[in-house]
Length: 447
Ligand code: UD1
Ligand code: CA
View 1 (cartoon, rainbow, N blue to C red):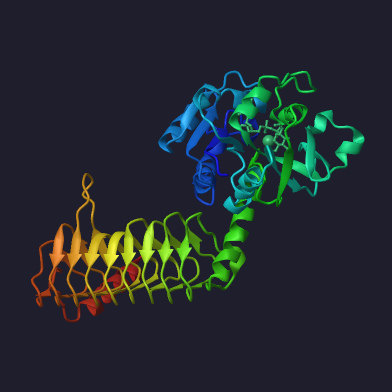
View 2 (view 1 turned 30 degrees about the horizontal axis):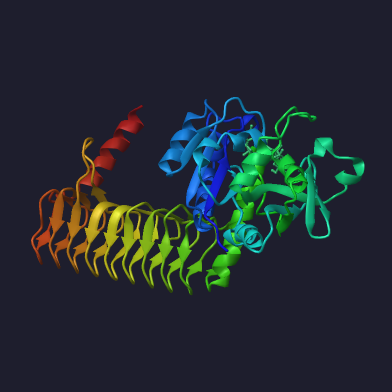
């Protein structure tokens, strides 16, 4: 039978090894803070209540956890993982269901894996621990098993040399009935090598109460805990390689997979082709049959079907590329709608703009959207032709089918189908160059 589910996310530890003014759990993996990854995991596995345990001094974590909609429990001082979970006791007063402990510094656990933890509880186990086979078990807690029962978790510092040979390790994820969890935690002591209240001690205590703990096995990459910048890079690499495989399995061509960087939420439809060294920030969706050429950077944008981008394009937040449109090399866009089949092919900045269909924007065109105080909008109608090196001084509207001569500084609206020339008239002086060179030469010969 399914029971109500709550999660306690531990984030009170000091993150000294990151050497950062920001709390560890607010550092990003795949463009999303670790804390937000774990919150998303909790949501994904159907948790109805989430308590985040933070230290008194971690204001940034407190604010971030609140902004993510979590309840806060303060743990002060930090006396160990068991003590940390116990700090959430008041928040879970009267809650009847299972409590799952997650670590905010362990961002990559897949929902499928976490769901197995609940499945074994639904199938009759009383306590479930997510374990993994560690290549190098190092300082991880070891899972001592007897058949399929978990008899204890022994911290590396307390382990016998025989126990240290165990490769099966504790990820930190532990799930049990709320009443069992808090009853066991109230009996945990700090009589151990670290002088801490170990959450892991609840296994033996609950066994003593006649409960049945079991271990569920995940893989090492997803349970990687981040303590340092090196770990952060390992987590990032693990995320990127998993995401690349996922994207390719869904029918996307990556010309050089290892050089493409994705964000946690990058969405790419099938038959899209992505060149080398393309970077996706958060919030990008790319629809079918589009091509992203090498060295392009995209963030917060929606790319339609059959769109062509780059090489060397910077597509910033709020850009919407309609079907069949193009952005060429050294083009930057921001808050810009590029209409169907419209082209901005070379060396341009298009910001706070709305382009209709089939617009052609010539090389070196700039929307002058900012006056030092406010941003203003440029609107360009269907089929308009913007000559090379145009400066569009916003707010300005270019009518449908209008034609802008090259090099214009366009400060006033242009009616539909009109020609606009916003440049000084050219003056030619016959023979001037010849006279100039002769005069210069004469002077040079004198000295
Ligand atoms: C813990 C486990 C170990 C497991 C490992 C997996 C215990 C006793 N040990 O060890 O079995 O293999 O994680 O990574 O549980 N935290 C608090 N308050 C505290 C202490 C910690 O909130 O007082 C938080 C930390 O912020 C972190 C998590 O709990 O998110 C784990 O703490 P950490 O000190 O890193 O535990 P480990 O020694 O790595
Ligand atoms: Ca740790």
